[in-house]
Length: 200
Length: 325
Image 1 (cartoon, rainbow over the protein chains, first blue to last red):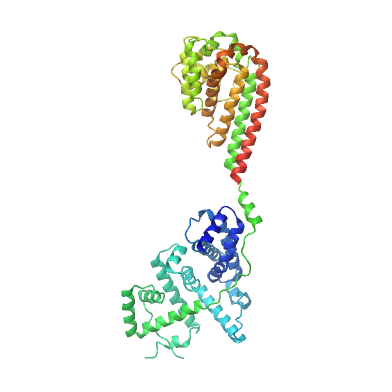
Image 2 (cartoon, chains in turn brown, purple):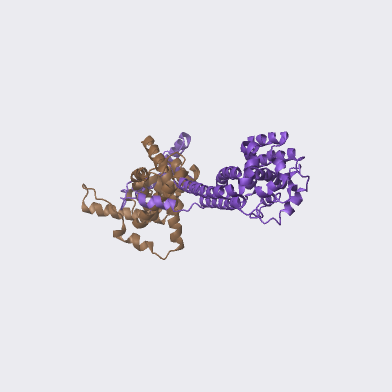
């Protein structure tokens, strides 16, 4: 797989768009998810993902080996940061309305084995978690997303975010704690965790 | 109803708990924390909450991209090449300009009026410049080959080697003025097409062959001296040789980024043509060819100009397309 990926990157570096598109297909789910969790809205995430791949193709010459996934996710992360900065400068577009809108949440396919009620619950929970993520500071959110949603190891996260292991650890722990507080305040954490401290 | 007042752990504890969840503690840290967890229910509750939070995040269903983000080759590829290659276009333009200027100089000298140019006819009338470079003397006959051997080296080296030619031939030529005179004497010369000093100096010797002798190898005098050798050679051959020199020199000018400082290139071409032509033709043909120079030179240099322009344009286009990929 790594060899195949290296071959595709080499071809793409020589301008072969189709080889690059093979890489796009392999990573678009991951990149889009990252963008969606970072930005909180499907349309912005789609734009950011598209921009990321375009930027990756144009800057492919600067890729000097190593993990293509890390390189790609780093571009996506930076693209998201750019979008977030843009939004902070132009806050006229209310994002709250969009995120509160049920229809704006991205496609989440119902598991055939779950009941419609469960599906709705799961969807609501997902929306609540996303709102919690939205409330995190950007630099904490990126750590939580990369670690707990993308499932990446600390060293790769450090590489993607251009930080060091210590920064990853501290920002991740603060992000998790803050998200926990948000979820607790929304009574979204299962009660047994909320009550555990009261007992013995 | 139930209140939850787990004491908030400090940042250091939070970091420990978080890293513990990820299995990122070293054995010592881990056992120390586990020991604390045994005795501190609040810490334990915090760990449980953090774990629940993480598992909720991990349990999120991946969202599906609304569309594919593959790139359209037609959109991506042209966009890259739309950036105009200014450098390449610039160097090509410089090369073409150089060729035009040289082409004019060539036609002017080869086929132009005798009064305006420094060319062979006037030189033929005066024996002094002829003698300066003509292979009538033994040392002079040797010099052209030596100069020709170094004709393709750097401009400075070529000029230096070419400087030996008139220096050796100096006793034959009319003793003459200082290099400054060569420069100033050139001013009234009507053939001053180029504003560059070497070219002006090169034009100068025809009416007055004084520039032939200064052995101090000042750069101006050097070029002027070389041009005498050039002038005394047959005009037809001279045209051919200079044209070759121009062809290579023009290519070099196209490649060199700082081509606008064209002076070294000019002198290199003059020196090359000057030193090369005696090598091949000077020995036998100079005296015979001189009378026919006025008629033979104009037609040949006109054609050469056309051919050279075509070559330069083709080279520029090739360069342009090659860089574009």
